[in-house]
Image (cartoon, rainbow, N blue to C red; front, side, top):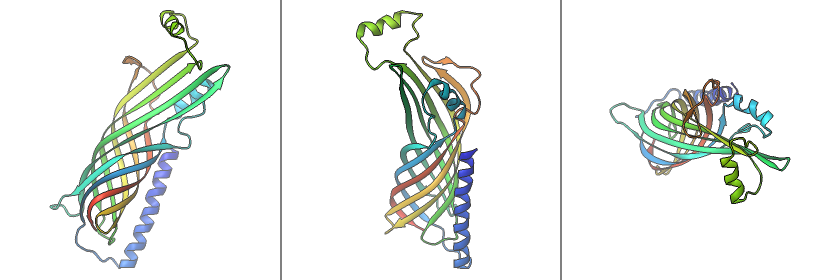
Length: 247
């Protein structure tokens, strides 16, 4: 819920910016934008994994992604001339965050890794000169991996294999869960070009995940996973693009 509220706030701020520019330009419309380019995107990511964090309280590590975490990747797009203002492209990025805590000679560690990619379809609003303000949708797929470990700082080779062969040993353990899903992600972006060859992007994306098919370790099915587990993430993006941009 917090992530959705942040996304709505971002959209509202951009809407106010649009209203200001519309008034300033007295609804002056101009030729459709054109551009083609690609570049690097950095993102501060807010996951929605509360069911996991509820369990981590008993496990003994801090919550994962409570203040967000860093993701990065790339994107590209091209305007298609036969539909003014419409651009298509692709995007993909991911990141990870880890929390750990030492207790009673054992290190407890939790890790979240998430990535997604897809095809982007955006429409650039024809009401602001020199800046491309676009709304759109990303359709694609993604993966979220959760890892949990409890172990001592050091191991001997013999101790390692002794634990592997001992079916009753639970002192040290590791678990890895993964989930593949479809992604539908509304997005809003502001592209600010410099000298037509470089553009800076600011934007927000909320990636909604559709799929709850979790696998454990060696592809064993995990049942009764709460549907709220890793159901979506909010991305606050900034990037730099190279190409040709005319707004």
